[in-house]
Amino acid sequence: MLIKIENLQKIYQMGKVKVTALNGMNLEIKKNSYTAIMGPSGSGKSTLLHILGCLDTPTQGKYFLDEEEVGGLRRNKLAEIRNKKIGFVFQTFNLLPNMNVLENVELPLLYAGMSKKLRRKRAKKVLDDVGLIKRLKHKPSELSGGERQRTAIARALVNNPAIILADEPTGNLDSVSGNSIMRIFEYLYKQGNTIIVVTHDQHIAQMTDKVIKLSDGKIVN
Image (cartoon, rainbow, N blue to C red):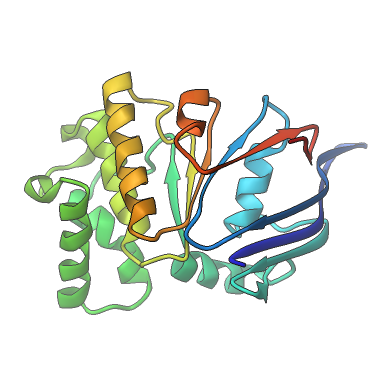
């Protein structure tokens, strides 16, 4: 099992008020699966994604990633796991504007200490996979929204992560670009990647092989 969470709770202290974002959640996700997380605003989708991506830690409960309990690890260890095992794709792309496409995609490999020759080779390979091999020297401002998101996907893939987490990946795109991005995710899934997508879009959810619906911090389906 790639992901297993047991009795997961996340409580935020907002002044004198405690807000329960996740309330005793249990979940298992297998390797090489394609999962959608759905639910209304405030249902806990983003909190769950942040914990799965080791960007946040649970207040209570256990989180196992690749059979390693990671829920209570320290920040530096969580950062190491994020860099090695998790690829992120955000609605807002999160590309560095002063770097070109190739440099943006190389960045996780730079942090991992890979040599320039190897990281350039690997970055070009994933950019070819997402159809951007001819745009290597372009800055993000010179790309369309769909091209920027494909750059973000390439960056997420470059470390061969165990899991790809996508938060509303088509939210800022027109329908044509959005469909193009979802075809890339489908291709990646068929290549053996594990993908989890947070979405409000029922059409996108129907492309996955499992849908998890949240309400008030709990799984309801």
